[in-house]
Amino acid sequence: MSESREIIAENLIKSYGKFNAVDGVSFRVKDGEIYGFLGPNGAGKSTTVGMLTTLSVPTSGKATVGGYDIASQANDVRRISGVTLQDVGLDPLMKSTELLTIQGRLFGLTAKEAAMRADELLEIVSLSEPEVKKRPVGKYSGGMRRRLDLAMGLVHQPQILFLDEPTTGLDPASRRDIWAEVRRLNRELGMTIFLTTQYLEEADELADRISIIVKGKIAIEGAPSELKASLGSESINVTFKDTEAAARAESLLVSMVDRAQLDRKMLRLYRAGAAEIVPAVVTTLTANGLNPTALTLTQPTLDDVFLQVTGQTMDDEAQNSAEPAA
Image (cartoon, rainbow, N blue to C red):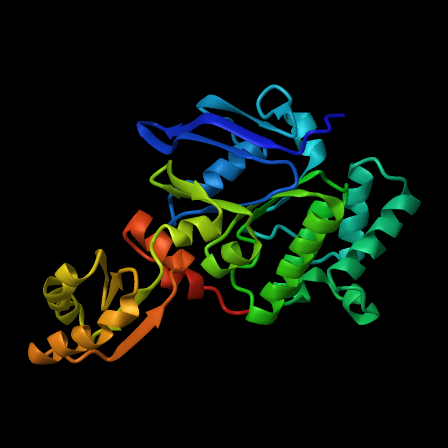
């Protein structure tokens, strides 16, 4: 068995006709690292995960997962990898213990070992209460199904875990439960974790390094702290009642700062020591008949990094489209 827990991608390309959904992606995820893979909807995140987990064959390029080639050694990649995808594929008529036991048997465990592993995993993901174990999975909440799906990906004690937007649609408490379990798996078992997410806070909380993919290409990579520091020490965020007012404010204030970024009704002003110019910003706006609805002074966040790289923030509609689940 390979002892490596690295993921290495070299010029991965996935084409559909003349369209490259993934266009020359290269990166290296270190042994025992949590690696965040971010990008707007349609940027190529899930397509990349599909190739790395052998669900899709690259058009060109190559990648290894745990030292195994995703094309020529696909069975080995599957054996050492756990996968939790966006769409939770669980039989609604079966119970959690049944699903986990069947999964264990498929990975070669004896009936006794599979049953013991199922009980262990249900305890880990907080689904071990007798009344919960008796309930068909179809009657679980969205958060419960997400936790069970995570358990399914851990049955065979993988060296590497792929999490494709694992907390989408969950309420904040359920999301933090998943975060805690991801940290535990990484810290206690040394598991390498490849995480795609549409929640920037999640990437900031969990990832040792992140990359942002835009239109099939990686635009930036680094530790969250490094990427945030690259923007400067502070930003002034000024919100207006409409986009026209924000655009007019940008033309008035851009000469006062190192960089200005327009984000719909919000104008973000970046400059070292930004707090010092807040009075001048307010005076300029007032003198020109512009009255902001809000003005805040903040340290750079991953949202600022994402905005700079992609020209947009994470799609708010995408983040809130799913009904929060317990």
